Image (cartoon, rainbow, N blue to C red; front, top):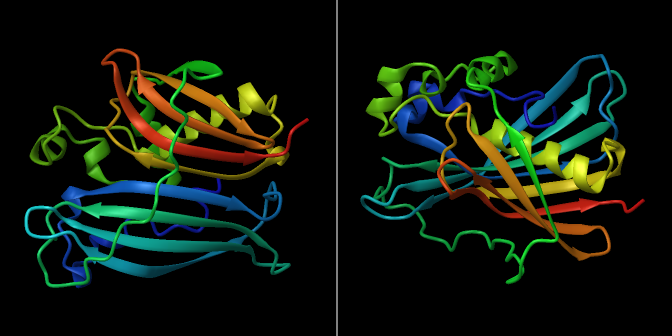
Length: 231
């Protein structure tokens, strides 16, 4: 829920930004939870663009954003969501070429646990109800024009499946124990595929993770890190 609350999901469709929105993908995302999400009420999301990185001609650009979500009635800060957008057509504009943010390195050993969860063939159509109506996730023509064989699953939906696996495996479905989560997107997921989340217990209250698509044998979510309260 924190991934979509107060989010202007299609801000990059605004012609004012000059982006080719059909070639914009999520690169990374992180969530920091400050308080329990209320079961009802009104929230306010404030999004800022923190940095824009020029990766060079034919290499695209990176846009770093952060969004703070607060409860309107109490002013309580609920969560902070940080995102990296990969703009595949926008490199070479002469902007700064700063080093990308560091990634969490996973242990070089077998995972301590794995959790397989299926996705529905209509998962992307259902996920659009959260407010992200990007046709990349529903229109075969748009998806093929962006270089995909068919509509892909929202990256935030992939993260949500990983979150389900982590809650099930490490927190016994007690979401109050989650403090933060972050991961990097490495490949797209197609609705209907099975996601396997591999989990490494690295320290007290810290677990690394990555997600694989069983059917294609590829890693789709990598360099993940969960901070949580141990039971």
